[in-house]
Length: 224
Image (cartoon, rainbow, N blue to C red; front, side, top):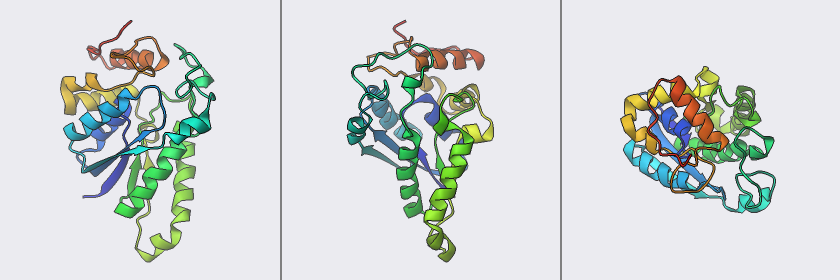
């Protein structure tokens, strides 16, 4: 079976992307601790890596990124308030480029042919979620390993996302429900770090809307 490395955050998008690909690939998950407020997602990733039967699951500490990011965004800054609707302060500068670079390095060593992240068609506000970005990064990475690829030591990688296949968050939720059932409500989407989802941040709002659009009764525990 072909191998795929998945950027596995513990959020509903990446976990449902694994559900979507599970029957076709041997899956390896990689989770990043980058100084985010919502470190509950790392705990969720550990739980779902076992539940989904990932071949391997690595948690990579890149907490130094918080110092580099400073107060440039609300997800790592302790000073900025998390907005309830999209604001560019939510965008962590080229976060997916950082994640995908490390995930692709692992993919080349595993001879995996696919690197996955959970960007979907609703992520239009985020430049590093768009298919154009993924295609250019994929091309650059393969160029960086071109000699190994030509010699047969490495596999050419594809950077895949639900977005590139035209899948929405609701589409992902339907795939996740088939594999996980009610366990899907234990995924972590919230930008805050509370016992339960805050229910008011932009990510929680998007989660609520996606469940409603998928016609799935949302059993997630929200504070509001």
